[in-house]
Every structure is written in structure tokens, then in C-alpha cells.
Length: 143
Image 1 (tube, rainbow, N blue to C red):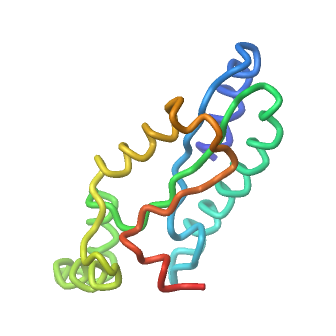
Image 2 (image 1 turned 30 degrees about the vertical axis):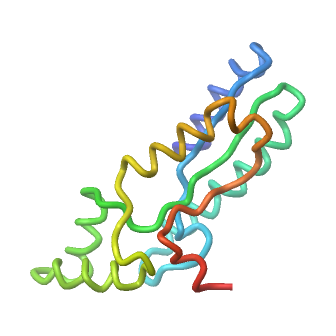
């Protein structure tokens, strides 16, 4: 709901000023699936659909709407997922998750922020309605 309400209020202002750029956070889970995480996956699929629709509706007002779709990021949320998956063996869960990423590691929050800053900048002035995987080639393993 955060992306929906964020867009609801910020797009009104951007429409009035006839410019703007929004970058929402989706997830690799919004492009694929994840056993045991149906609510999370559904919410991230919704972010991608919402972004595409908002981009189409706001294009005439020179407002760009995009999303990033990271895989595992080295954050407290990921540590919680590891712990839920393996309990006391959270370190083993991390090794398994990282092994599923061809670059063999999690992303850093800074790497995600760098992509978001680029998409918000004038250098990305013709990019809208898109989502960008930032997943260490994990998405390249799927169709």
C-alpha cells in the first residue's frame, strides 16, 4: 500500500508542476515467485503493474515513473528472512541464498540507491514505465 499512497499524493504535486520522477521499490519476487512469501510476492507484482499504469497516465505531464527490482540486499530484512528460513542456522541460509545469485553475494543498499538516483536524474529523462532488475544476474537464470 505504501507505493499506492505515495503515488496518490506525490503525483498530484508533480502533475501541477508538470515534471517529476518517481522510483518505487519492487523486488525480484515481483518478477518471479517465492515459496512461503505469497503476500510479499503479490504486493511486489502490484508495484510493477501500478508503476506501468502511473507512467502511462502521467507521461503527458512530463512525469516519469520507474521501479527497481532487487534480489537479496544485505539488510535487516534479509537477516530476518534468513533466520525464518533456518532458525539458528541463519548463516547457512545466507550461504544458500547467495549461492543462488550468479555474482555470489547480496547487493548493498548503496548499489540500489545508486540505480535509484540515476533513474531520478535528467540522465534518465527518456526512461519511464520500466523496472530494473538489480540482482547479480539471478534473473538471467529464468525465462
